[in-house]
Amino acid sequence: MRLFLQSIDLLSEKTGKAFSWLILALTGVLVVEVIARYIFIRPTFFAFDMTWMLFGSYIIMGAAYTHLAGGHVRVDFLYSRIPTRSRAILELVLYLIFFFPLLLFLVISCTEFAIVSWAGDERSSVSLWKPPVYPFKTVMMIGFYLLAFQGVAQFIKHLHMVMRGKP
Image 1 (cartoon, rainbow, N blue to C red):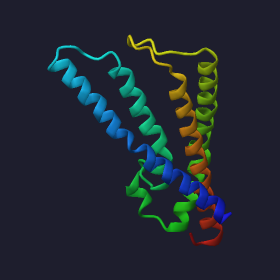
Image 2: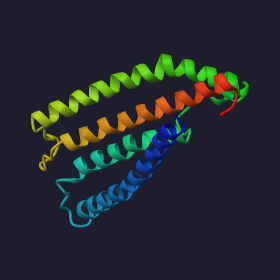
Image 3: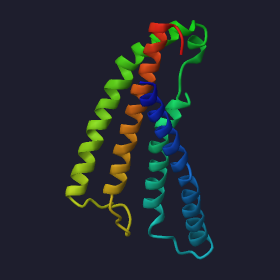
C-alpha cells in the first residue's frame, strides 16, 4: 500500500512540475501577440487558441500536484483549531460528500467529451487557425484522472490517520 501511495504522489509531483513549464510557453505566445499587435499592427491568428489551451493544460495538469501539496482552498480558521485525528475524520467526510462525487462527474464527462471530440475531429471555431481541440480535451481528461488518483491516495492517508492515529 505504501508503494502504491508513493507512486501516486510521485506521479502527481512529476507531472505537476513538468507541466509547470507551460507557463513559459504561454508567456512566449503572449509576448509574440503583444509585439505583433502593438508594434507591427498585425495581430496573430493563433494566440487566442494557444493561450487557452496552454493555460488550461497548465492548470489541470497541476491540480493533482497542488492537491498533494495542500495548495487548494480550505477554511483554515476552523480546520487549524481541531485535533489532527478529528481533521482526518472531517477530511474523510468531505471527500465522500463533495470531492469524490464531483470528481466522478468530471472524469466521466471529460472522458465522454474527449471520445466525441476525437471521433468528430473537433476543431476550435474561435480563430482563423482552427486547431484541433481533441488533444486539449484529452489532456483535461488525463488531468482529472490524475486528480482522482491523488484524491484516492489522500483519502487512504486520512483513513490510516483515523484508524492508527498517526500519518
